Length: 46
Image 1 (cartoon, rainbow, N blue to C red):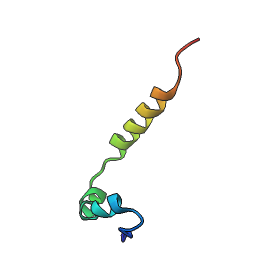
Image 2: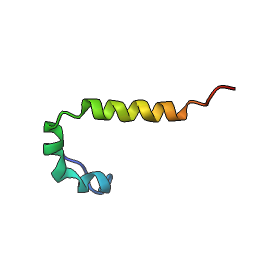
Image 3: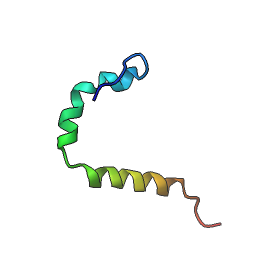
């Protein structure tokens, strides 16, 4: 994957990590973080 460093400098700086990250199975970690974030946004009972 090629990222234009002028448009996305932070993402482009991470380019060296993408190959290893894509090989890792992190679906459940990412899904857990997503669910935790969504639940944190839900207001409690009124």
